[in-house]
Amino acid sequence: MEVILLETFDRLGQIGDVVKVKNGFARNYLIPNKKALRANKENKDKFLKIKNELIEKNKKIIQESKEVIKKIENKEIIFIRNASDNGQLYGSVSPKDIANYFNEKKISIKPSNINLHTSIKKIGIYDLNIKLHADVGCSLKINVATSEQNAKKQREDLKNESNKESDDSKKVSTKDSITKSPSKTEAVAEQKAESPKENDLKVSTKKNSASVTDEKKNKNDLKLKNEKDSSVDKDKNPKT
Image (cartoon, rainbow, N blue to C red):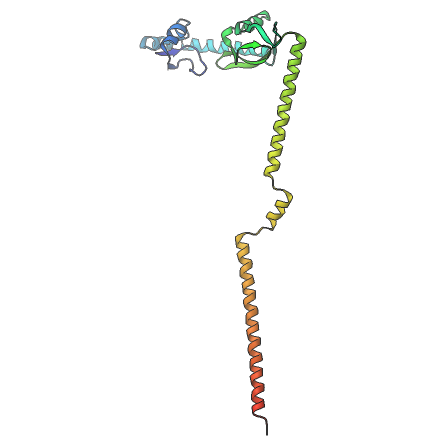
């Protein structure tokens, strides 16, 4: 079914966009909650009349959402719960429990605005997302423990683990850098290594030098031969 969005939805569209959604989603959620209109000519005309009003309302929601986020961002949520020896909770921590936690602090956040990455059924520290608007949200951590002291220990353990992972990452990075960088011996070898052109030039120069040497030797041999022949002629024709 095609609908006209009356609100901005993450990964769906902006106010006024005509999008195609599943029939059940439109009939059971979007249209009854006045978050969208069925995309027909009558509703398109209706939307044009209320467009500016919807845009102003959306701006107000964004501003209010930002104010709420300022109150909760960078905060740790601590839940003290009973658990078995292996850390299994007697129950679980749900988005509704977290919403009640905020309500007790006079902060209005609906369970539908809370997204858990995994079910919370054991003690530990978990990540969660608060999404108050398609454009406004934050990430938080929830520390579920059997006591304040255990919550503190879990926080410190997580911090130490994070620091260790950071140090290990730096070590790996340094090791890779050393592996990739040539050693002093290799650097010297590279400096001594000659390019093919340089080798060809050296061989050519060596050949030319040898050729000159051979030419000089041939001239000397010819000179000695001439001198020898001249000496023989003198012996055969002595002066009278």
